[in-house]
Amino acid sequence: MRTDEALWCVVPAAGHGRRFGSEVPKQYMPLAGQPLILRTLERLAAHPRIAGLMVVLAEGDTAWAGIDTMDGKPVLTTLGGAERADSVLAGLRALPGDVSADAFVLVHDAARPCVRAADIEHLVVRASVGEGGLLGAPLRDTLKHADAGGHSCGTEPRDGRWRAFTPQMFRRGALSDALTQALADGVAITDEAMAMERAGMTPLLVEGSEDNIKVTTRADLALAEFLLPRTR
Ligand SMILES: Nc1ccn([C@@H]2O[C@H](COP(=O)(O)OP(=O)(O)OP(=O)(O)O)[C@@H](O)[C@H]2O)c(=O)n1
Ligand SMILES: C[C@](O)(CO)[C@H](O)COP(=O)(O)O
Image 1 (cartoon, helix red, strand yellow):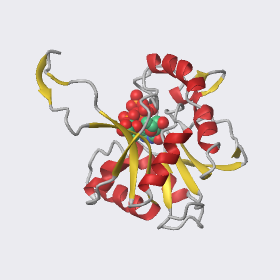
Image 2 (cartoon, rainbow, N blue to C red):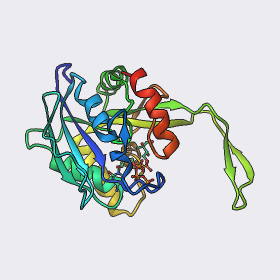
Image 3 (cartoon, rainbow, N blue to C red):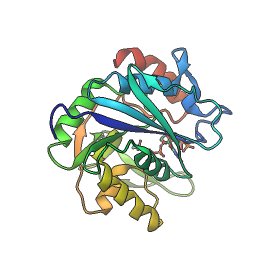
């Protein structure tokens, strides 16, 4: 990948935030005075390598701000689907025609507003040498296996286990094909790297900051308020 090659970023934002438990989908909850999603888009658009944002919205989303640029970068939208993988695939398909099948594309959760520019840079530089990769961090807690009664019935090995974050970066065509195949196979795909692994790839794991949190619960939103100004 040429070092000056601009990247589009697909931003899946079509979830309903069930674990967050509010009428307002979590991507529209206020974060430092703005809807959370706009904080994420601001963070992404500020990165010099990112050429444009493809935001994937839920059917019937009435809260979207309707912006078409952010920090001088184009912001396009399309509609997502029932699962995250459906939404990411829709976003890939809706990218502008001049984004070739071989072009690298980033995918970043709308629910991760604290992503650091340095981590994005680190991912792009390291993962573009091969066929793509993802930000993550080695598991640092002990992982327990819970039984139906909520008791620990086993301890999972921690060695070689990582937590996956986003952005994840893959070539547009290869990722589209991998997601299409996984969906056709009826496999529940929770991140893009999983689809690429099923296609036989071993995506590069690039260690990123643990404060690149995904806002899933209300407690996460409070943490994001604390982290946002400290992760610029
Ligand atoms: N069908 C879906 C499901 C999720 N997402 C997006 O994928 C990201 C990560 O998903 P998650 O944190 O699970 O969000 P929700 O699915 O909204 O949360 P929940 O599982 O609690 O409903 C979010 O930005 C979410 O909007 C999406 O675009 N399309
Ligand atoms: C993509 C992801 O953020 C990596 O950890 C995570 O898999 C998203 O899962 P979710 O259930 O869609 O939040």
